[in-house]
Each structure stands twice: as structure tokens, then as C-alpha cells.
Length: 270
Image (tube, rainbow, N blue to C red; front, side):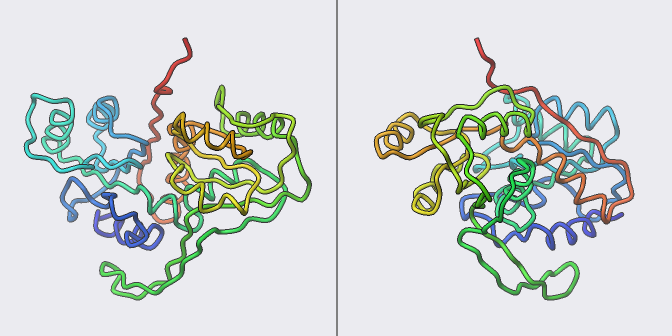
């Protein structure tokens, strides 16, 4: 399958126009006319990812976090980032990154993680947005549907302590951080994967507890004093299943070999 054909399908699923303005998504390295027979999925394009891709003759890496995020003034072997990019280019390995457009898309990462929790109740798309957009690769107008956060309204209240255990068991993680009373009961659960604290005030009056990653001390302190409940799943921990989601999405239109790469947790408990 040609890379441009894959890009056309990904454009349909994760439209680039729902990406945050500061983000950098799409084909960031590579030739869109190349034939793709083998794809590797990852959260971050680390040196381990690049080595695995080279060793396994991978044609395309699909990452969640962009391999090129801020402005680059040079690409040399003097930095880790430069060495990775040089290795990718030398081995003709393309990189396509799907970041906030993956989070916000309907049936994207926010939905995937919320559904993984297997909670009984209805789901609401917060700040829902729909529009028509032209897909230049498929040469057709497509309907685009997205939303910033997901809110689960449980059929019955549950204790925060039980929710914390459900999160750890469902996502396969060893711990979470939380702000609030673990004996409190919650029913309306908000979620933004990754570092989603910038959205928590937008949904604060609609939820009992907010799940995200990368919470800062003063954000947590303010929430505690305001009587709100927060759960910090972890940035890596709330997004590493992007790999599983992408395998499911790609299997619907790609017949080549697919490799899933999982890094170890970044932070260790001392």
C-alpha cells in the first residue's frame, strides 16, 4: 500500500484540522510515494523505536507524540534527536504522528481509554464539534466529528477508591495519584488523556472527578481547597494504549505487517 493512501485513510479517521494550534501532526519524515509493507506503532519515537524499526525493515512509524515538535535549526549527530532523525532518513523510514487530533476525534484516544475502564453508564462528548471538510487525497468531502473531553455518567455512584482500582486494573498500571477523599462517591467522570489539566476548569461544573496526567502541585492544591477531585493517571500511562488503538484502526484497511512497541514506564518508584 502506498504511503499516501495510508495518509488518506488516517486523514479520514483523525482529521488534522481538529488538532490544537500548537501541535505538529501528519507526515513529519519521509516520502509519501513509497510502498509500505510494515508499520510500527509507538507512543514516542525513541532510540529504541528507531533501532527496532531499522532491525525489522519497517517502512513507516506511526507515533502519538510528534517526532518533530518545535523548530529545528540543525539535524546533526551531536544530539539524540538529530541522530534519530538522521537514522530514520538514512534508512528511508517515514514517520507519521497523530497527537491531539487522535485525542479529540470521535472514537479516538479519549474514547478508547474511557471505554477501557468498562464503566456502566452513558458517555457525553464535551465541547462537541462537527463540520464538513475536504480530504485532498481521497478527493471527497467528509464529515468530521470531535470533542475536547469525554464525560461518563455512571448508572450508579461508586466510591473514589473503587474507581482508582478500576483505573489501575483496566489500564494495567501500578499506581495513580489523586486529590480528594477516597471515600467520596462519584458519578460524573471527566477524562482527557495526556497532560489535559488545561481543560479541567472547562468541565469542572459538569463532573465529580477529572482524570488526566501531568498534574502540577498548585493545580492539585487549588483543586483540594476548592473541594474538587482529581486523578492523575500519568501522561505515559494514560496514552501508551495509543498503540493498541492504532493497530485496531489500521487493521481495517492495511494488510501488511504491524508491530506494536511499548516503552517501559518513564518514572520509577524509588
